[in-house]
Amino acid sequence: MLRMRKFIILLAVGAALVASGDVPEAQQPAQPDAIVVGAGLAGLSAAVEMGRAGLNVLVLDMNSVAGGHAVLAGGVALVGTPLQEKNGVKDSSDAAYKDWMQWTVDADPQWTRFYVENSRAMIYDWVTAMGVEFVRVGGGQANSVPRIHFTKGRSIHLVMPIFKTALAMPNVSFVWNAKAERLVVENGRVQGVTVRHLRTGRTETLRAPHTVLATGGFESDLERVLANWTPSLPRPDRLLIGSAISATGSGHDMAVEAGAALSRIDRHYIYIDGLADPRDSQRIHALTGGNSRAIWVNAQGRRFTNENGFDKTILVDLLQQEPSSYWAVFDEAARENFGVRGAAWVQTPMDVHPILDNPDAAHKADTLEALAAKAKLPAAQLRETIARFNGMIEKGVDTDFGRFRGGQKPPTMIAKPPFYAVQFFPMTRKNMGGVAIDLQARVLNRAGQPVPGLFASGEITGSVGINGSHGMDGAFLGPAILTGRLAGRTIAELRRVTSSRDLSQAPAGRILSDATPSATLPSRTAADLQPLLAKPRDGFWHFEVSHKTVVERKYECTLCHTAQLPFAPITTTTQREAQTQVCFNCHDR
Ligand SMILES: Cc1cc2nc3c(=O)[nH]c(=O)nc-3n(C[C@H](O)[C@H](O)[C@H](O)COP(=O)(O)OP(=O)(O)OC[C@H]3O[C@@H](n4cnc5c(N)ncnc54)[C@H](O)[C@@H]3O)c2cc1C
Ligand code: HEC
Ligand code: HEC
Image 1 (cartoon, rainbow, N blue to C red):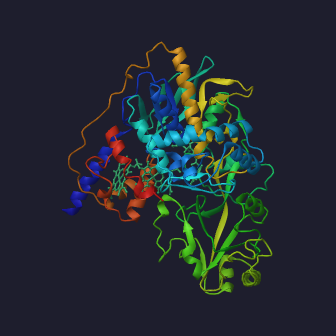
Image 2: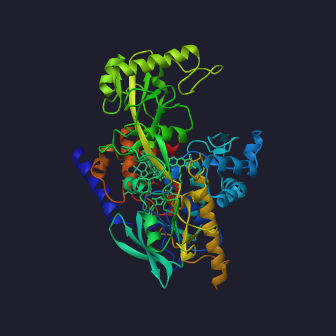
Image 3: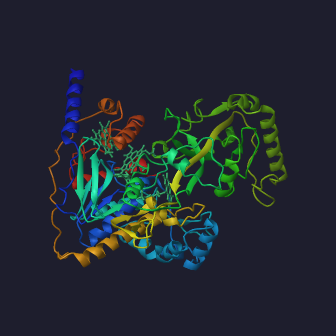
């Protein structure tokens, strides 16, 4: 009997999935004024800007949910804001310009100047008016005063208010699970885009006089990163992936095919704290993690850098090691200081830790000799390195790498068994170069001329080169908003000039497919998810990662699902709005 009931439920879930296909939440406007490819921070900012100017906008995304990388990100660098003032921070665009040009070495001076002068009005004021609340401002490696603005939790609190603003606009429509594959170029002008609906395989050509590429970077394509490796840096022996499955450069390819130039394409923000995700059978996807109380040793068992130094310095030190990897070594007393980031990891238990207590992910032993044997490190050297480090703690000065010196509180000694060794690798994260645009976010060709009909914003542009040769904290989210707005503004301006249509009229073409959600929610359990999660399906990536987390954490379905949010793909904007309320269960920290 029970089995029968389950079977019927499965059928119902399955039928809902098949029947739904790629239902757009709103009927697509017959003639959008602009298509935005990518519903990350940049694409959403462009959509809001154009939506407010009265344009009909169609936003597509290959994912089933909005936000892109910003969902997982931290803070945004802003200059001369009320929050800084409130915290007694004296800042000016000149001071920021000076700090940033110095840190980055060779950032684009024009964009850097534009950013430091406009971040307050174009980012801070704009997003706070939409309900974003910045709660704290912090320092960053490149900054002489605190400039990194944080919302509570992660920057999902920055991107969701922008998404909700776009969602509330009747002239902005979204199509999910739709991957843009090629730009339509006719008569020397970009006229739209060909998309593949991932859940059904159907392809379709969508047309508009203006197209904004906001597809993000390509840091998940390791081959592409290595083919465009920074010439001045040694090449890593092993590099892990630190960004999302969408970040493969599909937007770059489309732009280049339409004639776009690339600039600074060999600049990457490579992180130094990648840890191979033990849940990834291929061990190429990284988690970021670390322990502030660890020492880092190379394959020879020696320290090689100041673990607390600037990451741009550490990166060079790390890439010079053979192989370019290190082991973070610490003791039981420092166990609780070990941290892992990522939505699936925020509630990592300390009692049976999925990394520290997992022999496939970390080494743990009662003596340093046993630890060295497990990690294949030279035992005598490891013992000597730790003895030396403990000795320097006693004297109060790190005479080798300057991690601590007289007058500072030294770290604690590495002495209490069991001991841990966790291996780290360099990891890709952010592009600092990309599709060339001008200050109006028009894509430029190799002759420096605009490609008609084509715009780009966000990380696809390499965050407009303001990170130069060395990435800065918070200097990616900000450019995504800024360049998204610029693209939107330019298109709105062009539309105003060329369109005979009265844009003050209520925008046409939005018919909601607002089916009333069923009043009651059938009961479901984790077992119902099994067949849906059994093997990866195209267009279901986020459903799969999120519901694996649901199963792992033993969440009740009703924690998120209600009559408003049934066990089915979203078909209405009302449901989509309701859905944004449940994201924080996993993306808050
Ligand atoms: C873990 C992490 C932490 C970070 N922390 C910070 C931070 O603290 N501060 C900071 O400033 N920056 C940070 N960044 C970088 C920052 O988040 C990104 O640079 C920024 O969010 C990029 O926004 P975007 O809209 O340009 O691109 P993305 O966020 O990458 O969005 C691109 C969107 O386009 C979609 N897409 C891609 N290709 C296609 C296609 N062909 N067809 C249809 N849709 C497509 C994707 O699904 C995605 O939704 C972090 C990045 C990561 C990964
Ligand atoms: C913590 C919040 C949360 C919980 C708990 C949760 N879900 Fe979901 N569910 C979501 C979100 C968010 C989506 C949209 C996911 C997406 O499109 O990527 C969703 C979507 C779905 C879908 C539709 C997928 C599609 O075809 O687009 C099904 C089916 C589903 N959930 C089943 C379940 C079942 C069964 C449970 C309980 C075992 C459950 N969910 C528990 C948040 C949750
Ligand atoms: C039940 C947990 C859960 C819920 C609820 C959830 N997510 Fe996620 N989401 C994840 C996991 C796990 C990942 C994979 C990334 C990671 O491990 O950090 C992810 C990844 C993402 C990504 C890709 C990030 C990138 O790097 O580009 C986006 C965008 C995203 N989620 C948006 C949302 C939105 C919007 C909602 C609410 C509608 C939501 N998520 C709800 C668990 C969840």
